[in-house]
Each structure stands twice: as C-alpha cells, then as structure tokens.
Image (cartoon, rainbow, N blue to C red; front, side, top):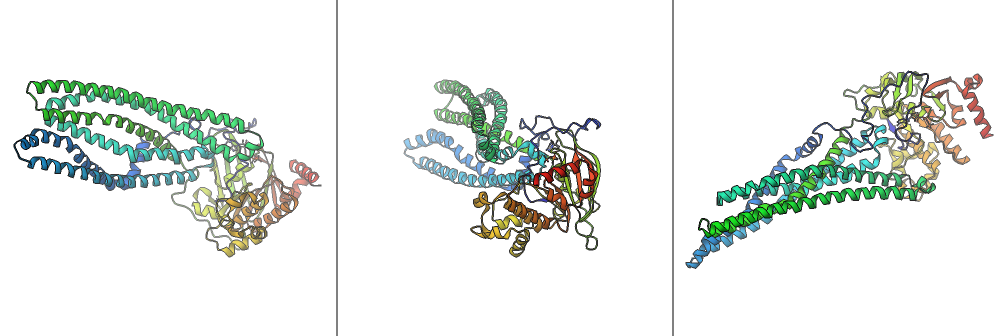
Length: 631
Ligand SMILES: Nc1ncnc2c1ncn2[C@@H]1O[C@H](COP(=O)(O)OP(=O)(O)OP(=O)(O)O)[C@@H](O)[C@H]1O
C-alpha cells in the first residue's frame, strides 16, 4: 500500500474518544492497552534488560575491533604506569650509582622513560582512532534502526508519540550514547586498568601501603553507588525534558501557519519558556550532583593520602621503609585517586547514555503497525480483462487503541472496477474505513480481503502495488517535481512521468515552472498551489496504477478553473480500477456507481446515487443541500 501523501488532515487530534453509541453493547477494550500516560510521560514500556541487549546487539558485529581497542589501551596503560616505577629505580639505584661514578643505570632509566612516553602516545592514538570508528559504526546502525522502525510504526503510534520525540531519540539520545562510547568507555577502561595496576604495584612495593589503598576503596565505592542512584533519576528526567522541548519546537514550526493565523506566538513563547526552564533545572540538578560527588570524593581521597603519607614518613624515619619506595607509593596513590573525578565524568555519561538507551529500547520494542507476514500470499491473476480488484470487509469491527469502538461490526463488498463514494458527517468514520482498506490499521476483529486474500497475508510490496491512498493534503517531499511524481513508481522513466502528468493535466503548469520537471519543490514549494499539489498527488497515483485507489477528497474549495482541473484529473485517475472516494463534492458523488452514507460508524444508506435520491433519505437531503449551494 502506498500513500501518495503523508498528511492526513481527516485524522483527529490525539487520543480522541470514540463516539458514544447508546444502542451498542459496551465498547470492547482494545488489545493490550498501555498505561494511559506512558506516552505523555515519555516512558514506553520495554522488556527487562532491553537497553543492555540493545547495546550488546549494536556492539556484536564489532567484537574483534572492540577487543583490539581494549588491548591497545591495556598496553598504553602499562607504558603510562611504568613511570613511578622508573622514579623509584632512579632514586634507589641510579642516583647511588651516579654517585659511585657509574652512569649506565641513569641512561637506562632515561631511555626507558622516553620509550614509555613514545609508546603511550602512539598506542593512545591507535586506540582513539579504532574506538571512534567503532562508535561511529554503532551510531550509524542505531540511527538507521530508529528511522526504519519509526517508519514501520503505526499511524496511531505516531499520532501519540509525535515526531518531536522521535527526533529527540535519533539525535540527543544517540548523541549521549556517542559520548559514552567515545569518551566515557575510554575513561572507564583507563580507570579500571589503572586501579588494578596501581593496587597490584603498591602491594608489590609495600604490602602495607597496598592494603591501605585497597581498604580506602570501600568508602569511595559507597559514594559512587549513591551518586549513580541519584544521577540515574536526573538523567531520565533530562532526556524527557529535552524531548519535550523538541516536541514543542517541531509542533510549533510544523503548524507555523495556524500559529501565526491565530496569534499563538505569545502563548507558545510562554509554554516554550516553561519547558526550557525545566530542561535548564534538570541540567542544573545533574551538575549539582556532579559537584557534590567531586567534593566528597576528593575529601575522602585526600584524607586517605594524608594518613598514608604520615604513616609512610614515620616508617622512613624508623628505617623501616626506603625513601624511594615512599616517593613511588605517594605518586601511585595520587594516580590512584586522581581518576575519581574522571570516574564522576564517566558515570555522568554512563547514566545519561543508560537513560537514553532505555528510551530508545522502549521505542524499538514497540511492535510495527502492520507486521509483514512470515509467508506472504500472492494475489490471484486478474480475471479476464476486468479492471481493479474486488474488496470485501468481512465481519469487521474496529476500535483505535485509545478510545472506544469506532466502527461496529459490518460487512461490505466493493465490486471490482466500481467507484464508491463515502459521505457522512464529520467523525462518522469515513477516514477510518479508508485507513482499514489501506491497511494503516488492522481490524480489531474480522478481515479485509483483496480478491479473496486477507490484506494481512500480502507482502508490503504486493500491498503497495495493490492499494494506494491519496490523502487530502498532497504532501511534497524534498526533491524535484519529477521525483515527487515518481514516488508512485520509482522505476518510471521520464517519458512515463511526463505522459502521466499530461494525462492528469499537470504538464502545462509543471513546464511553466523555472526548471520544469526538475524544479526543486522545496525551493518552489510555496508557489505550487493547493490545486497543483493535488494534481501532483493524482499523477503519483496514476503512475502507481493500483488495482484499488482510495481517495480522500480535499474539502478546501479551489477556484473554478482549479476545481475543474482537479475534477478532470480525478475522473482520469479513478477510471479502470476499484475506487473508494471520501467525497465532499456533488460532482464526485454523481460520477460514483454507488454511495455509502455513514453515521456514527455505521453504513446507514447504500446504493446508486440516483436510487438514494429517490429514496428521500439522508443522502437525498445532503444532495439537495449541495445542489442549492452550487446554484
Ligand atoms: N487516531 C485516533 N485515535 C482515536 N480515535 C480516533 C482516531 N482517529 C479518529 N478517531 C475517532 O474515530 C471516529 C471516526 O473518525 P474518522 O476520522 O474516521 O471520521 P471521518 O468521518 O473521516 O471524519 P472527517 O470527515 O471529519 O474526516 C471519530 O470519533 C474520531 O474521534
């Protein structure tokens, strides 16, 4: 199924309740309802451990490179940590040797220090390069996954989740994962390696210092634990606050016309300022937590160093310890505690990335709107020369995920090659009927069949070839006019595109554009009128040549020549296929073979237009009003 446009102006606002149907049994509950506020609170449910398995699945293809990067870092740390050992050797052996006139040990120490410094730089360069490549590949895959999944999610989902949150997931949340992968993980590995290495060396230098250093890790561990607990909450809120900001931004700019038309700027400024302040506050909370952590951790570390130095000085004075060992131990102790600040930075990026991953995992855990069948069925070959395909709604009942039943159980058959107009009051369920046929949604109960095959059994490609929906507001994607028409059939040649545009009556206005078919619609988009956009929409549909066409006729009235051009184009596009038209014009209804009148989700009148007029029912009344309005 293809929609030639994306705007669905007939969609209602989010989470509208279904109509109250007093004559119906109590509305059935939609399947597996989510907590009502999971969308508004930006907390989509994800299975336990989903964030971790998402990260593991992202890193899995790069396992050899991750190990290689870890090895480079290990070697780099060995080179860095050799420094204090060389100092100890210089003080305790090389200096006495120089005093005895022997320079060999000092030269050896100097050479070793130079080699270690060079190796450390080279290895770090290799590590940064490798880890940056891995993280870029991971982010590339993750953004791709979010985009693909976003496209597969149902309309219903998008109406509730909003594009702003999706953008936030694919940008700021992915960015916080980048920070973790490129900076945070390096910090963590460096800190972990340095801690193990320094503790072992300290034990090796002097077991008493080693034991004291390891014991001082206990209060630091408790500090880190409580810091993590608090930042976890703050970063969850930060990601939500950022997403809310983007949602407001996107909503305002997407609706810039009504915003300006209704002078909503001041009101929007106020709402935005409130959201902006909330984001600032949460950011401030995160910084405050960080500051608290740094101050307390430094205090604990400095106290530990002071105590150990005092003890060491006493031991040197009593002749129990060599001065070089004390100097090396103090250098190592400083190196042991220095990374505590950096550990805070790592924990920051870790918690930020964990909150973001949790949100991304929640999004990716949402089931696709119209799942692809495991073993798709094929449509039967069209019967001898018959245009279009037959449509059957069998025992169909439908409720949106939010709200009650919109379409009570009904059966409906649309004969192949016929045009059926659907009319009815606003909210009667016309668009919902169209969306079921286009498989934007699957029925809550019953089946929708295309030439006897359930839509759910058709592959997406087959469905796309079979059913096309043209919505009221013809949306133009970035690209040229020709690209926009070719959306109906991407492999179409330029001749076919022009031929279709001619058939629709769009050729003249397109060739009058500065670059004809190659005019960029984004630059020129504003100047392509509503009627012309509809013609482009029809050209797309005609090029796609589907067996079944669903057309949500635009309600906005065009000028008379524009109206005529659109009407003529509609006649062309409807011919030779099965068509379901949500009709707002008398002229459209008059060319239909059959009219369905809908009210409160039910088909209350059904028949050829002439017969319905003769029956003097609702349609006859509507028809009379139309006639009077065009007189
Ligand atoms: N995404 C949705 N979630 C919940 N309820 C919805 C949703 N979309 C529509 N509805 C409800 O379903 C009912 C039928 O809506 P539908 O859009 O099909 O009517 P319509 O006849 O096409 O109206 P219009 O002529 O105004 O476009 C309405 O009560 C509407 O509030």
